[in-house]
Image 1 (spheres, rainbow, N blue to C red):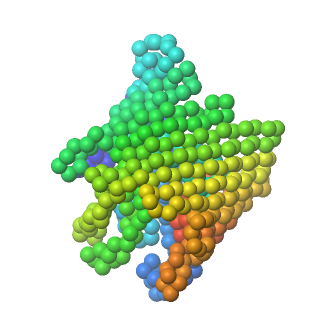
Image 2: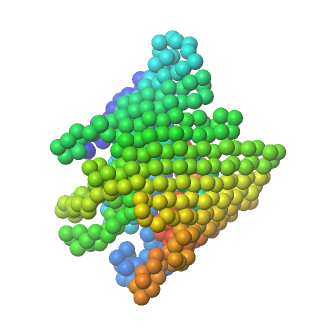
Image 3: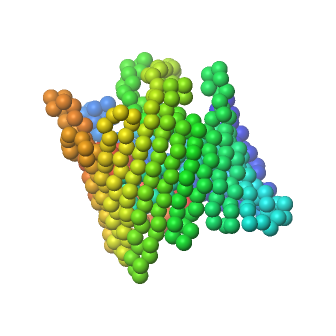
Length: 410
């Protein structure tokens, strides 16, 4: 059924293109490969140095204006079989098609009002936060980037006085024997209004990514399988860009409350691997997670720097507080150097940059550092650097060691 839908989406996109008044193509690809120069283990063969690859995003979009009021978009994205990322040789990449129709209702009706209404329908994740960000990607106040899930959605944007947009939508899906009105989204945002960007939102049964777990498959292979669940989410964030001569300072703040319950927030995995179904229920979450962040980004001529502080607390568990710093210098139009430092939890007992051995109580890395060079060649950006310790500091690779990465967006 899924393959049929993918093929049908491609065929419809090709057939529909000639009837569009205007057609535009867009795409994005992020790929990284890294190595800590240790023995390959189960990644390579013959004990040679091992490399790990990460495909974070592969996406091709076709947008066509049927007329001056209606726009149709076909997106063909790729995702790993066991989660958002495809790593090494333990998985497969599959198509994740999306289809969106946007109609300018007030324009089509010939109404000149202080309010503009746009209907949005299709199989997409269109209803979600704006995710305002600052810095080069090391910020601990990781601004909320949430959506109602990749389902069949219907909703609308209502723009008031060309300043504030109210967005609402919902999607329906079936889970086991019960039907849920899932992924309802309502929010309001302003985008760069005299330097201010802000939003407030609520999402019912939003998808939430969790840590991965190691799974030993029926075939005997060990896989790191990302886990996810669903929760109700309330959040708000804001950033204000202040320009002074050749200098720009952007303070920012974010807050999010994630509400889990045992009826909705079940955890487990269910996937096919080498002809076998790997399925297991791991339990459920039932509690409240509060997370927040504060930051400031500074830009002057070729220099940029960011400092941020972020924390969180789940029910009665100990609170966590992280600190991040990043800086970059644009040498010329082609080359930029960058570096970052991150402490995932300042309240933890350790500040290790590398994972300790079992004899050291198995303490995990809590600190991370990253430095490298960015080379821009047209629409393609190439990165060469080294990442040490915890995290995915730079949104290029999750793996520790030296890396080569490329990002293309058009």
